[in-house]
Amino acid sequence: DVKVTQSSRYLVKRTGEKVFLECVQDMDHENMFWYRQDPGLGLRLIYFSYDVKMKEKGDIPEGYSVSREKKERFSLILESASTNQTSMYLCASTQIGQGNQPQHFGDGTRLSIL
Amino acid sequence: GEDVEQSLFLSVREGDSSVINCTYTDSSSTYLYWYKQEPGAGLQLLTYIFSNMDMKQDQRLTVLLNKKDKHLSLRIADTQTGDSAIYFCAESLGIYNFNKFYFGSGTKLNVKP
Image 1 (cartoon, rainbow over the protein chains, first blue to last red):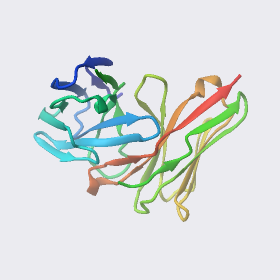
Image 2 (cartoon, rainbow over the protein chains, first blue to last red):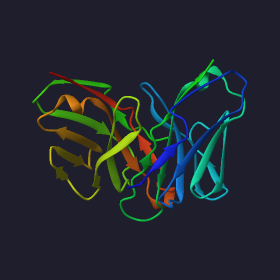
Image 3 (tube, chains in turn blue, yellow):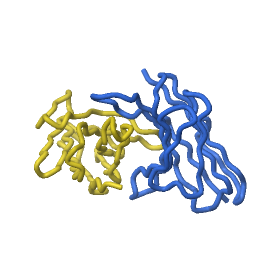
Image 4 (cartoon, rainbow over the protein chains, first blue to last red):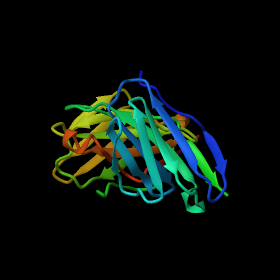
């Protein structure tokens, strides 16, 4: 089974702090994704990466950056956290390829910015 | 982004069937998915359907796809209290779009005993 592990289930930080959310997958997947989930809005894509050191903006990249130095690890960075970034953050990974390629999710990090 | 739409809430009694509906907009989507999210957890893949199929059955789950109307539904037979969760539909944009997904807003299913 694919395992996607997010480093923290709950995190509380202060406004203006630099925040790192870490995600690791164990299936050698090329693609990795960061989403935020807010009630009534579903999942919105922040950034994704299709290879080491490669990244692409998603639908809501403002206020975030990412890092992918190793294939298995994809980090989301909040450069200067603000209260409107309080949310549930979900990481996912998937294989590149034709056919059925579902995204596999971690358990999420519930981040509160005070 | 693409608009994948779902109703926000559904309430059923234990033992009844549940039907969760979804509409999507990208007619080139090749695979469509249903995920389940229990409280405080990530998304768990439930089932999927290939776009050239009309129906797929997997134990208590039945997926129906109307490609002409871009309508997808998930039927859960004999709904149990353990089925209470948020259900997301998702469309895959395929290999030429990095296998990105667009998700609906999620339908919260409440199963009353």
